[in-house]
Image (cartoon, rainbow over all chains, first blue to last red):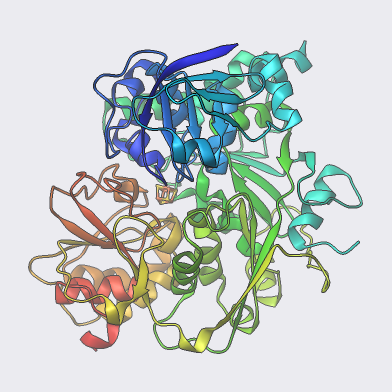
Length: 163
Length: 420
Ligand code: SF4
């Protein structure tokens, strides 16, 4: 599967309070969470964003709380995937568990500019910057994570065990 | 092969003789935790699995502590989801308002976590229990949903970083200052994916409450877990409480560490982390002139009895500055009661502080002390991210309880010696 979209840039250490401020956590409804996605971040949710576009950030994306509401809000807002130098570990787990594709590449995170057109091959993790023609390999997804993805998320993976 | 304490606990729960960093394991859990924000999502996901019941009704803890006592209708609905689930599955360790406390103060206090345990929680500060020599780590709601069904979880064995503190602490210096200092040195991703092990003579002499504070903030350096070797101080705390048998694990002397940091603890001053990252820490003597509007003493980081005693020591016979709101939140009902018995609550109220029932409240900008634009708050909490406690243009400074108390008296950030 190939993901295509325009890049929207964020800095390093984007925390979960920035992605979805706690005052909105009195609900877990994805649509409501999406309405407030990135409300605590500078810059905030990009106004020209189109469904399927891609977030690109520096290091330690998603640091802070364990709220799964963070990747849920991003996914429900229509973000097709997030590329970052590194991800905070709980966010990393959560993203896989809820089915938000994420790709780790320090080089891509440094190079890609706001507005670049990107193509990401989800299975190989190869990121192509269509604007510059440059390609980047993202860090390989651990085999166990691949099993979870193949099953369609952690809940399906576990549900299979109960069948 | 030599192993660290973290590796030993993980190996034991995976039924293996040994594990190595990077290895993926399936591990049995001793306890899974959820709160009023994360448990409703976990419950929704659990119901999709098709499991008939939870794996063990005594090994799941549900603590509605963030927006409780319910701050609005939506929070009330979230809390109701947990209450109904707890009732349906006869969950023993469900703590409703009146018995509830901040989860990471409550669980150890109630003896639900012990040395050698493997605990996962849908809350990033689950790493707190490393203070007892347990492996504990935060995850998301879906992970907890799976664990509630299976009684196990998958984990990647982390590499460990060792922090060695030697020497006696200066007056007013606490576990909070040691961990703020570390985060200042290594940064908010300085221990990403790794275990932080705290050792040395300073740690051996550190109170259990100080140890909880240190392990609590391991996540603020990106760590998977924080851990302290259990000893007699640990034993004294858990012996009267633990409901299950516990086991002490220790790192082998020749265990492998990714890095080792050494500190002369005698030189460390009380720290203040400036906005908007816990890594922006500096000694309070270098804080400069920072006026504050609010001071918060509480949270899973510093809402324990020792923290309240220190705050009372500073506040006794003094008055909170006329421009400052001081809000004090005891971590649990037991801590609240103990503070009451010791006369600490009276000290607080006479000083002009607002004392609340246990809740996370302002720590995450939930309720009970939200900041307006341009306002500054000094807090004993753990995160000073943009907007964490309210308006995006408010500021949070993190410190220990003595500094937060002294600052509330002076109206600006000062060390406790300035109000003595
Ligand atoms: S006190 Fe703050 S950091 Fe601790 S669990 Fe509550 S909201 Fe989270």
